[in-house]
Length: 450
Image (cartoon, rainbow, N blue to C red; front, side, top):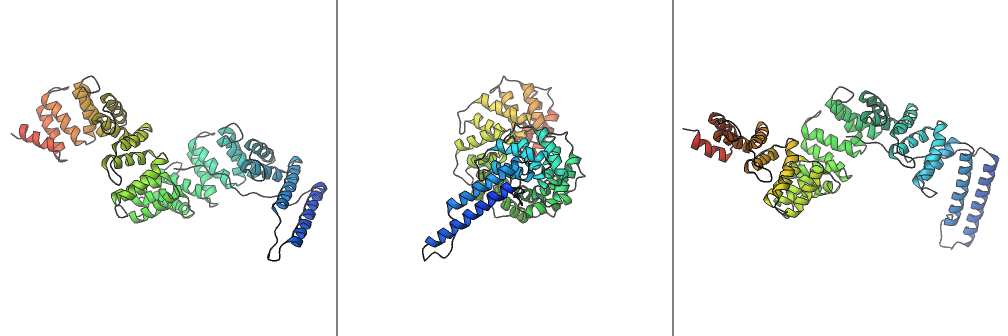
């Protein structure tokens, strides 16, 4: 995945004052500063080995500096306008005021100040100090990017990659990511890796993806570290190495990356690249889940439902399944349906069970499709409908779900919802037997092996 870069916190201060009035103000400021230091040195204690200006003196200088900066900005000095905007945007030396920041960025940007153009683009992209306008953001990012501003190049690439403020153009996105990456910015390096990883705007090349992820990861970019861990975990573009995967997941997870935290939890749960430790797995799932990661919420729900790595708590399991299910996680939806059907951690409710099975089944979840078939076959939570049951059993069986293969076989054997076909029923049971389905073995021996 990628994300937009934030504006560089660095700023350029005015190098020359450019006017007699400004020079006089600074002269006064320096004189006051020196005289106050001299006074403070005269009254300092004998044990005081160093002399520093008092807070009042520093405040006086800051005030005078701000007066000079404001005056230069009003006179049209673009650098001063940008610096004043930066101060308002970050609340440095003045009360934070993003509306005022945008005003000064605009003035400087219109004079061609590249940092102001990039900053103004960011304000429009995020709706800070101005009404959010991604088209306007793209205009200013473009101007700054063409002057070589690395943040603007990275952000413009993101706009093209996602069709935000411009027509979606992944080839153009790659161009701008490449420009920014060649300047060494970590976000662009990682984004370029993603484009090669997914074959978006460029021929898919997992080896090239790994190379770019590596560069970004070594700079500490958490998203790239997670993606590099994923490549090592799956042996994509690099020799499979689960120990190396864990190392990169760990680095990203410690920076708070939710995807990496969830992935690290999975490695601990399954003992891949690290000693199996369900307690540690639950810790990392919890961290990711609290950030809203749906997969981690589902996994944490499983841990609570089964008492693995945490004390068994079906109420807590339901709470986490619910969070993940509401985000559209099909596995969580299916499990939440099961909790409602069986009354585990929640009041038994067949209607609710069907509702969640339906959501998961429509996303292709085979277990949910089989369970929904059962509900139709028995008329639980829905009007009994053998044909609907067959329909859902069929979908799950085609995905290789052994229980559904048995259930569908039974429907054919007895002719429920379909024309009776014992041969087809037995054939479906044989498929389920290959997966060691005990019920299929028992029924096949009784009805088919004669």
